[in-house]
Amino acid sequence: MLTIYGCYTSRASRNYWLALELGLDFRSVPVVQARRLDDPHSADAPINTLSPEFVAINPMGLIPAIDDDGLVLTESLANNLYLARKHGGPLAAADLKEEGQIDGWTLFAATAIEPSAVRIVRTIDDGAGETEEGRAVIAAAIDALDKGFAVLEAHLSTRDYLVGDRFTVADLNVAEVVRYTMSQTAFFERHPAIVAWITRCHARPAFEEMMNRRLAERF
Image (cartoon, rainbow, N blue to C red; front, top):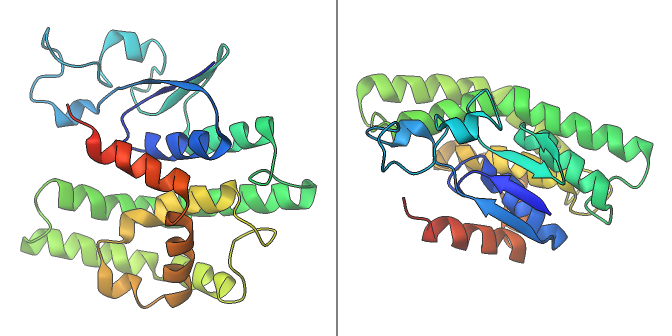
């Protein structure tokens, strides 16, 4: 059975969403980010990214990780590529050309979007979003996102999905990265094709189920 380590309020959300899309039986092991805890080393702390039992699974101390019948993988986007390839169906590549496109869009999200998007999320989560320094960090992150969003907007302006005229793991991976920018409404809404695309992605029952579990999560 597939085991997913990580809380829904983390990058593990993308692995949970894919598992739900695929209809997989999976075991969830909640692992919270140590930075969210006052004392992650205390005896009563929930299992977290500094807990020895989790570090034994991922020595980097980052979530998510998956264990698929003994195969341990620890990069969230790559986890999804692996699971889609293994289980096939419409979320997976239909041929080598689509596989290259899916991999390309996934790496695009990881390199052109995610670093700046995460800076926005971290700044807001740290409570600095309304400070002068925090606003400057967010503004710089938005500037850094301009080129990547322009590329994505141009691509989606002529199609509903990224690859093969259907929802694939590429859409899921990229949507989960782009979601980090949605708090910046003015910037986001300057890209109507992206808005329409992510709305389609977020209307999927598996995404809605993942988000319901995320909202119900308590630590």
